Length: 471
Image (cartoon, rainbow, N blue to C red):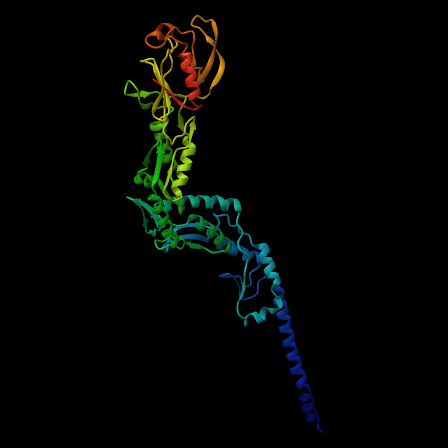
């Protein structure tokens, strides 16, 4: 083999080695370069990395934070009405806290720096920050200001109205609902805070337009209409002093109230009505008309036989009776010695005529006893009034004070007290005679002096409780 041939063979045998060396060098250079590049991503985000809409590819944590802070400073929360801006306020003014370095550091460290090359061929890596934090004090302060503005704005809107019942002549009728354009401000600001904390940037006020919760075809409203109109037609009858009368239906209709789905009566108006009943009918303050034996019709002042309407209690009972929805008849709840429903006195009573100085006892409308009497002298007159015999006593000693201040104690056989001041009917054996003008000179201390033999009869005839009319 010639020398030239040997050189040719050596070249052929070295060629694969050279190629291998070159390839190995390229690989080593590539690996080394990739490794070096990977080291840079120990502190930077990988290519094609986004946080929201912000591209943070190859940025350090600080650089990414600076970009986010800048972006956040421009963010605003917009409150719209019908698609138009009503109010815009920067989130930073709402207390947005704008430092994300700690969270960004965590996100960056979770990325694998060795995958930077592969990242070019993958889909973008969209990272998500936790919802933005807000300074609660600032947020609450700003929210309160916004709420005040929105409340003022909302007052100018047309309020939505539920279908309801309204008074008309003779009863009530359904008034249909009305759709307005006012909004539920409480709900607006509940969602405003929630959306803000979630990272949202706008809210539409028309989404919070208040809708009617009760419509004209609501079955419950129809039931309530039937109920209130039944109440409006109640026949409410009073029986007072033996006479009856009906409360005018228009008066009850005036008292009725329908509010928040409930039927009630205006207590103030009912109370005023019952008060007027007392003014008109209380026998404790109104005189009674009486057909006397000798003087025809007379007016007898109120006395111990009387009653007074218990206004508060009667108001409550009247309201309860009306709201029951059934016609009724009642007599007022009253305080006193008589029943408000019955006549104050009937056809059994004692009549004392001060002018004629005469006394009668009527039993079932017939004169059972008649006698002249001596009543109180001018300085201690017998009081006029509708009284009653609230007790009967035998062998009683009457005590009191004379005009000169001296004390007296007078025993009597028969004693029938008629008022609460010591006035009564009794026998008086010291009187020389009865009737005429004797009361002016030998009149009593206020009692009705009666002949002893007549007093004995009267005492046996009457019962405790018999009315005594003095006039």
